[in-house]
Length: 131
Image (cartoon, rainbow, N blue to C red; front, top):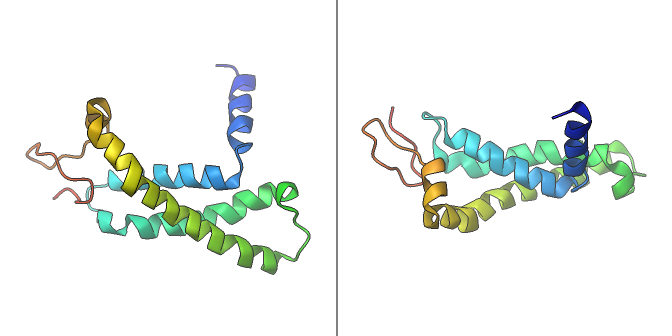
């Protein structure tokens, strides 16, 4: 893959818009934290919310022409931080209510995102592996 192709992919992803990028990134962050054995999965919604609240204002500021940035920075942050929090927790809810059910029905995805304990026993999606 050439640098121009990589740049094209990055531009295509960024053109999706800040909300879509924030949701996809929060789902990815959730999978990352879910794979950490000592992390309690009951707190994933908090992590996704905080990640969205940080990520969305930054990404939206980078696309400020698209959103009409003509206010002061304080007004911008007051508008975008709650939106990012909602997007992050919405990403967690989308995974919890939709994607997890798809993972459970498709055997290849079930094995791809499977989490097991030390004995090799399959864990349900919401329970962290024992250390």
